[in-house]
Image 1 (cartoon, rainbow, N blue to C red):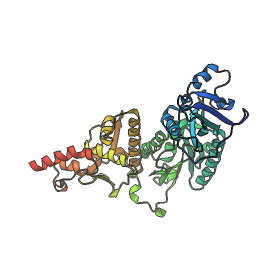
Image 2: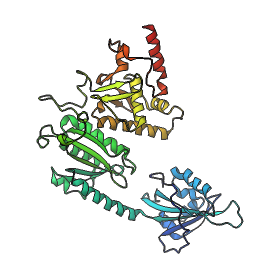
Image 3: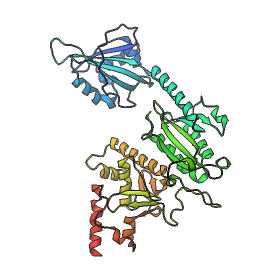
Image 4: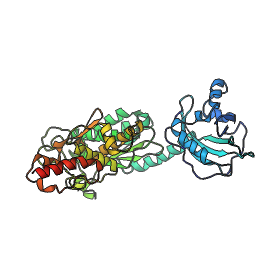
Length: 443
């Protein structure tokens, strides 16, 4: 059994729950506070965790310590609750998400209390009360999702429910192909659904951007967590005749209760929109061959302008990108500082979390930051300026205009830009600043 999400967060105090017989849906486990050895439980507690009466050896093993019923990732939080509890306090309520002995994921509501002990000795008895609420919450989520889907179908001609953890999707509305919409009660492969969507919605040269936009959200939402920073939005040129040979569409990701998200799309009426035109990806020139996004930005002035002298900022057609994640913005600054060279995960961690050791948990955080950066760039139509190969990342200098790059190249217009200040936001940039100062003294 292991946790799907950190569950041990104390909620409001409740009145003490009385002991009940074996027919109750409430499971009760009593254990010693110091050794955590189980000293008693009702039959329902064993049913909840999926250990039958015939599994005597397994019950005996679990009884040696309540820890063996607690997900490993949550042990520290569980112990903190024990340390904070006292017999005079009401039970602490928390939710847990675990897997039973057969691997089935379940949700349980729990109450933890310290039973009165007349002697006041350290071996006081703790009581854990739990209820399996999986079915009840699944029904509530299903109803909530159904209501939400009906509301979204009034505004969007395409509505999909994406379940990243299961790698599945359901089509709830697809106005251009009612045949697939009629399969709404069936779950299809996420890969198949994504292939179908990008082919039928986006112009050929926009498909890679739309695919990356959705896939990044799916990776962020694995493990029954919704994609962070929802809703997210991207605009792209629509496919074929139904899109008017270049009419804009938008795709929007919205959180769906209980994990997963809705993927919605519709044609954009630019005349009625308040969004600045800079958000719109460039359309393919008449008669030009299909291309990947950013492929021709080396010709003429790049759309992306990066400022490093002073504070770090990024502009698309003169409009600044508003980064929701400061770490994602810092990661882009680091890639710019490396001037097109590949940066490893270890390099990123050393710079962005300079006072923390490199651990598996920190590597996971690093990947999430990289995904947030990708989503932000894709949402602004410039995802191609960052290249990733086998976990290493770099900025593509040919696709951006950057004061640092111009200055180092000896551009006639760049010399006056540097005034002794470089990436003031970030301490790790001091090495490059020293180089710039020395070069300025030589000039």
